[in-house]
Image 1 (cartoon, rainbow, N blue to C red):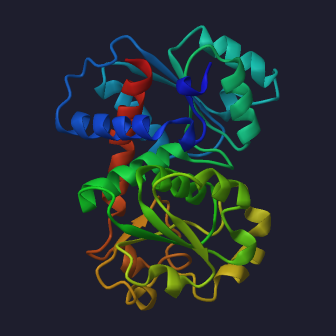
Image 2 (cartoon, rainbow, N blue to C red; image 1 turned 90 degrees about the vertical axis):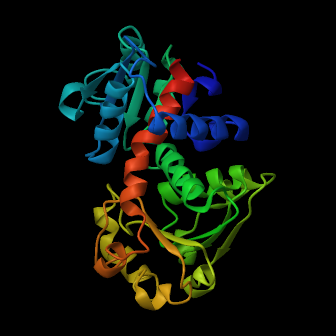
Length: 299
Protein backbone atom coordinates (compact mmCIF):
# COMPACT_ATOMS: atom_id res chain seq x y z
CA UNK A 1 0.00 0.00 0.00
CA UNK A 2 1.17 3.52 -0.74
CA UNK A 3 0.50 6.63 1.38
CA UNK A 4 -2.37 7.45 -0.99
CA UNK A 5 -4.10 4.23 0.07
CA UNK A 6 -3.99 4.82 3.79
CA UNK A 7 -4.79 7.45 6.38
CA UNK A 8 -2.63 6.95 9.44
CA UNK A 9 -1.79 10.65 9.80
CA UNK A 10 -3.77 13.56 8.37
CA UNK A 11 -0.82 14.58 6.20
CA UNK A 12 -0.79 11.24 4.44
CA UNK A 13 -3.23 13.28 2.36
CA UNK A 14 -2.19 16.16 0.14
CA UNK A 15 -3.96 19.48 0.79
CA UNK A 16 -5.86 19.04 -2.48
CA UNK A 17 -7.04 15.58 -1.51
CA UNK A 18 -8.01 16.80 1.94
CA UNK A 19 -10.19 19.50 0.37
CA UNK A 20 -11.67 16.89 -1.99
CA UNK A 21 -12.68 14.68 0.95
CA UNK A 22 -14.38 17.64 2.64
CA UNK A 23 -16.19 18.39 -0.62
CA UNK A 24 -17.33 14.75 -0.83
CA UNK A 25 -18.51 14.92 2.76
CA UNK A 26 -20.59 18.04 2.21
CA UNK A 27 -22.15 16.62 -0.96
CA UNK A 28 -22.98 13.28 0.66
CA UNK A 29 -24.68 15.02 3.55
CA UNK A 30 -26.97 16.87 1.16
CA UNK A 31 -27.81 13.96 -1.11
CA UNK A 32 -26.91 10.28 -1.06
CA UNK A 33 -28.10 7.50 -3.34
CA UNK A 34 -27.07 4.74 -0.97
CA UNK A 35 -25.17 3.15 -3.83
CA UNK A 36 -21.77 4.85 -3.73
CA UNK A 37 -20.03 1.75 -2.32
CA UNK A 38 -22.23 -1.26 -3.16
CA UNK A 39 -20.91 -4.66 -2.00
CA UNK A 40 -17.92 -3.00 -0.30
CA UNK A 41 -16.92 -4.24 3.17
CA UNK A 42 -15.12 -2.23 5.86
CA UNK A 43 -13.42 -4.33 8.54
CA UNK A 44 -13.30 -2.39 11.82
CA UNK A 45 -10.57 -3.49 14.25
CA UNK A 46 -11.00 -2.13 17.80
CA UNK A 47 -8.79 -2.32 20.88
CA UNK A 48 -10.23 0.83 22.51
CA UNK A 49 -13.83 1.54 23.56
CA UNK A 50 -15.84 3.68 21.17
CA UNK A 51 -19.17 5.43 20.81
CA UNK A 52 -18.79 7.84 17.91
CA UNK A 53 -16.10 6.03 15.90
CA UNK A 54 -17.87 2.69 15.64
CA UNK A 55 -21.35 4.13 15.15
CA UNK A 56 -20.31 6.70 12.53
CA UNK A 57 -18.26 4.27 10.45
CA UNK A 58 -20.85 1.49 10.62
CA UNK A 59 -23.73 3.83 9.83
CA UNK A 60 -21.70 5.48 7.07
CA UNK A 61 -20.98 2.21 5.29
CA UNK A 62 -24.67 1.26 5.49
CA UNK A 63 -25.73 4.61 4.04
CA UNK A 64 -23.21 4.18 1.21
CA UNK A 65 -24.63 0.78 0.29
CA UNK A 66 -21.80 -1.23 1.84
CA UNK A 67 -21.27 -3.24 5.01
CA UNK A 68 -19.09 -2.98 8.13
CA UNK A 69 -17.73 -5.84 10.23
CA UNK A 70 -16.80 -5.15 13.86
CA UNK A 71 -13.90 -6.98 15.51
CA UNK A 72 -13.36 -6.17 19.18
CA UNK A 73 -10.40 -6.93 21.45
CA UNK A 74 -11.77 -10.37 22.35
CA UNK A 75 -12.10 -11.26 18.66
CA UNK A 76 -8.53 -10.55 17.59
CA UNK A 77 -6.13 -9.84 20.43
CA UNK A 78 -3.60 -7.57 18.72
CA UNK A 79 -0.11 -9.05 19.03
CA UNK A 80 -1.38 -11.88 21.24
CA UNK A 81 -2.69 -14.86 19.31
CA UNK A 82 -0.72 -14.06 16.16
CA UNK A 83 1.65 -11.46 14.76
CA UNK A 84 0.10 -8.14 13.77
CA UNK A 85 1.37 -8.56 10.20
CA UNK A 86 -0.58 -11.82 9.87
CA UNK A 87 -3.79 -10.11 10.94
CA UNK A 88 -3.23 -7.50 8.23
CA UNK A 89 -2.66 -10.13 5.54
CA UNK A 90 -5.72 -12.18 6.52
CA UNK A 91 -8.12 -9.24 6.77
CA UNK A 92 -6.95 -8.02 3.36
CA UNK A 93 -8.47 -11.18 1.84
CA UNK A 94 -11.95 -10.53 3.21
CA UNK A 95 -12.76 -6.84 2.97
CA UNK A 96 -12.09 -3.74 0.92
CA UNK A 97 -10.62 -1.53 3.67
CA UNK A 98 -9.53 -1.76 7.30
CA UNK A 99 -10.35 0.82 9.97
CA UNK A 100 -8.29 0.67 13.17
CA UNK A 101 -8.83 1.99 16.69
CA UNK A 102 -5.72 0.88 18.56
CA UNK A 103 -3.52 1.88 21.45
CA UNK A 104 -0.22 1.61 19.59
CA UNK A 105 0.45 3.68 16.49
CA UNK A 106 3.29 1.27 15.69
CA UNK A 107 0.74 -1.55 15.36
CA UNK A 108 -1.28 0.61 12.95
CA UNK A 109 1.84 1.21 10.87
CA UNK A 110 2.53 -2.53 10.74
CA UNK A 111 -0.99 -3.28 9.57
CA UNK A 112 -0.74 -0.58 6.90
CA UNK A 113 2.61 -2.00 5.75
CA UNK A 114 1.34 -5.55 5.30
CA UNK A 115 -2.27 -4.94 4.21
CA UNK A 116 -3.18 -5.05 0.52
CA UNK A 117 -6.19 -2.76 0.98
CA UNK A 118 -6.64 0.81 2.28
CA UNK A 119 -6.10 1.31 6.02
CA UNK A 120 -7.71 4.12 8.04
CA UNK A 121 -6.64 5.21 11.51
CA UNK A 122 -9.75 5.65 13.65
CA UNK A 123 -7.53 6.61 16.62
CA UNK A 124 -4.14 5.64 18.05
CA UNK A 125 -2.04 7.06 20.84
CA UNK A 126 -0.32 9.34 18.31
CA UNK A 127 -2.98 10.52 15.89
CA UNK A 128 -6.71 10.88 15.20
CA UNK A 129 -6.99 11.97 11.55
CA UNK A 130 -10.68 11.07 11.23
CA UNK A 131 -11.52 13.45 14.05
CA UNK A 132 -9.50 16.14 12.28
CA UNK A 133 -11.58 15.64 9.14
CA UNK A 134 -14.79 16.16 11.13
CA UNK A 135 -13.31 19.18 12.91
CA UNK A 136 -12.27 20.84 9.66
CA UNK A 137 -15.67 20.13 8.10
CA UNK A 138 -17.32 21.77 11.13
CA UNK A 139 -15.10 24.84 10.90
CA UNK A 140 -15.63 25.13 7.14
CA UNK A 141 -19.41 25.05 7.35
CA UNK A 142 -19.56 27.33 10.42
CA UNK A 143 -17.31 30.07 9.02
CA UNK A 144 -18.00 29.51 5.33
CA UNK A 145 -14.39 28.49 4.76
CA UNK A 146 -11.16 28.63 6.73
CA UNK A 147 -10.69 32.37 7.24
CA UNK A 148 -10.79 31.95 11.01
CA UNK A 149 -8.65 31.44 14.09
CA UNK A 150 -9.11 28.48 16.42
CA UNK A 151 -7.63 28.31 19.91
CA UNK A 152 -6.69 24.90 21.29
CA UNK A 153 -6.57 24.81 25.10
CA UNK A 154 -5.37 21.78 27.04
CA UNK A 155 -3.31 18.69 26.29
CA UNK A 156 -1.24 18.46 23.11
CA UNK A 157 -2.63 14.98 22.57
CA UNK A 158 -3.40 12.87 19.49
CA UNK A 159 -6.47 14.96 18.62
CA UNK A 160 -4.54 18.22 19.01
CA UNK A 161 -1.68 17.00 16.85
CA UNK A 162 -3.91 15.85 14.00
CA UNK A 163 -6.03 18.99 14.17
CA UNK A 164 -3.00 21.32 14.15
CA UNK A 165 -1.48 19.66 11.08
CA UNK A 166 -4.82 19.46 9.25
CA UNK A 167 -5.59 23.09 10.06
CA UNK A 168 -2.27 24.23 8.64
CA UNK A 169 -2.94 22.21 5.48
CA UNK A 170 -6.20 24.07 4.75
CA UNK A 171 -4.98 27.53 5.73
CA UNK A 172 -6.61 27.76 9.15
CA UNK A 173 -4.76 29.66 11.90
CA UNK A 174 -4.43 27.96 15.29
CA UNK A 175 -3.26 29.22 18.67
CA UNK A 176 -2.28 26.30 20.94
CA UNK A 177 -2.06 26.72 24.72
CA UNK A 178 -0.62 23.80 26.68
CA UNK A 179 1.58 23.38 29.74
CA UNK A 180 5.21 23.19 28.56
CA UNK A 181 5.50 19.47 29.31
CA UNK A 182 2.34 18.59 27.35
CA UNK A 183 2.89 20.45 24.08
CA UNK A 184 2.41 19.29 20.50
CA UNK A 185 6.03 18.22 20.10
CA UNK A 186 8.74 19.45 17.74
CA UNK A 187 7.97 16.70 15.22
CA UNK A 188 4.43 18.05 14.75
CA UNK A 189 5.64 21.64 14.42
CA UNK A 190 8.17 20.52 11.81
CA UNK A 191 5.41 18.84 9.78
CA UNK A 192 3.38 22.06 9.77
CA UNK A 193 6.17 24.09 8.17
CA UNK A 194 5.40 25.07 4.59
CA UNK A 195 1.62 24.84 4.77
CA UNK A 196 -0.65 27.84 4.31
CA UNK A 197 -2.01 28.04 7.84
CA UNK A 198 -0.09 29.08 10.95
CA UNK A 199 0.16 27.30 14.29
CA UNK A 200 1.44 29.32 17.24
CA UNK A 201 2.21 27.73 20.61
CA UNK A 202 1.91 29.46 23.99
CA UNK A 203 1.46 28.41 27.60
CA UNK A 204 -1.15 31.02 28.57
CA UNK A 205 -4.74 30.04 27.71
CA UNK A 206 -5.94 33.67 27.81
CA UNK A 207 -3.38 34.63 25.18
CA UNK A 208 -4.52 31.76 22.98
CA UNK A 209 -8.28 32.41 23.16
CA UNK A 210 -8.30 36.20 22.98
CA UNK A 211 -10.39 37.20 19.94
CA UNK A 212 -10.44 33.60 18.63
CA UNK A 213 -13.36 32.52 16.43
CA UNK A 214 -13.54 29.10 18.07
CA UNK A 215 -12.09 27.44 21.17
CA UNK A 216 -11.30 23.72 21.10
CA UNK A 217 -10.52 21.48 24.05
CA UNK A 218 -10.32 17.77 24.83
CA UNK A 219 -9.87 15.58 27.88
CA UNK A 220 -6.73 16.10 29.92
CA UNK A 221 -6.32 12.37 30.61
CA UNK A 222 -6.69 10.16 27.54
CA UNK A 223 -7.44 6.43 27.39
CA UNK A 224 -4.43 4.48 28.57
CA UNK A 225 -3.15 7.31 30.80
CA UNK A 226 -4.87 6.41 34.07
CA UNK A 227 -1.52 6.10 35.84
CA UNK A 228 -0.73 9.72 34.93
CA UNK A 229 -4.07 11.14 36.02
CA UNK A 230 -2.99 12.93 39.21
CA UNK A 231 0.12 14.39 37.56
CA UNK A 232 -1.79 15.65 34.52
CA UNK A 233 -4.66 17.16 36.51
CA UNK A 234 -2.13 19.10 38.57
CA UNK A 235 -0.51 20.45 35.39
CA UNK A 236 -3.80 21.67 33.91
CA UNK A 237 -5.75 22.88 36.93
CA UNK A 238 -4.47 26.47 36.81
CA UNK A 239 -6.27 28.20 33.98
CA UNK A 240 -6.72 25.48 31.36
CA UNK A 241 -10.39 24.75 32.00
CA UNK A 242 -12.62 26.15 29.27
CA UNK A 243 -15.24 28.01 31.27
CA UNK A 244 -17.17 31.26 31.04
CA UNK A 245 -14.31 33.27 32.51
CA UNK A 246 -11.85 32.04 29.86
CA UNK A 247 -14.45 32.37 27.09
CA UNK A 248 -15.10 35.98 28.10
CA UNK A 249 -11.84 36.80 26.26
CA UNK A 250 -13.45 35.52 23.04
CA UNK A 251 -17.05 36.74 23.33
CA UNK A 252 -18.26 35.45 19.98
CA UNK A 253 -16.23 32.25 19.86
CA UNK A 254 -17.84 28.88 19.19
CA UNK A 255 -16.91 25.85 21.32
CA UNK A 256 -15.44 22.64 19.91
CA UNK A 257 -14.92 19.36 21.78
CA UNK A 258 -14.41 15.95 20.20
CA UNK A 259 -16.15 14.13 23.10
CA UNK A 260 -16.43 12.42 25.49
CA UNK A 261 -16.28 15.52 27.68
CA UNK A 262 -15.21 15.29 31.31
CA UNK A 263 -17.47 18.07 32.47
CA UNK A 264 -15.95 19.90 35.40
CA UNK A 265 -12.40 19.10 34.30
CA UNK A 266 -11.31 20.46 30.90
CA UNK A 267 -14.69 22.12 30.23
CA UNK A 268 -17.69 23.17 32.26
CA UNK A 269 -21.18 21.80 31.83
CA UNK A 270 -22.40 25.33 31.17
CA UNK A 271 -19.98 25.78 28.27
CA UNK A 272 -20.95 22.48 26.62
CA UNK A 273 -24.65 23.29 26.95
CA UNK A 274 -24.33 26.92 25.84
CA UNK A 275 -25.50 28.38 22.55
CA UNK A 276 -21.88 28.79 21.46
CA UNK A 277 -21.35 25.01 21.55
CA UNK A 278 -20.78 23.15 18.27
CA UNK A 279 -20.01 19.80 19.87
CA UNK A 280 -23.11 17.96 18.65
CA UNK A 281 -22.68 19.21 15.09
CA UNK A 282 -19.02 18.24 15.36
CA UNK A 283 -20.02 14.73 16.48
CA UNK A 284 -22.47 14.40 13.60
CA UNK A 285 -19.77 15.45 11.17
CA UNK A 286 -17.77 12.34 12.04
CA UNK A 287 -20.37 10.50 9.96
CA UNK A 288 -20.25 12.85 6.98
CA UNK A 289 -16.47 13.30 6.96
CA UNK A 290 -15.81 9.57 7.12
CA UNK A 291 -18.28 8.89 4.34
CA UNK A 292 -16.35 11.40 2.24
CA UNK A 293 -13.11 9.62 3.12
CA UNK A 294 -14.46 6.16 2.33
CA UNK A 295 -15.77 7.27 -1.06
CA UNK A 296 -12.41 8.89 -1.83
CA UNK A 297 -10.54 5.68 -0.94
CA UNK A 298 -12.89 3.03 -2.32
CA UNK A 299 -15.01 4.46 -5.14
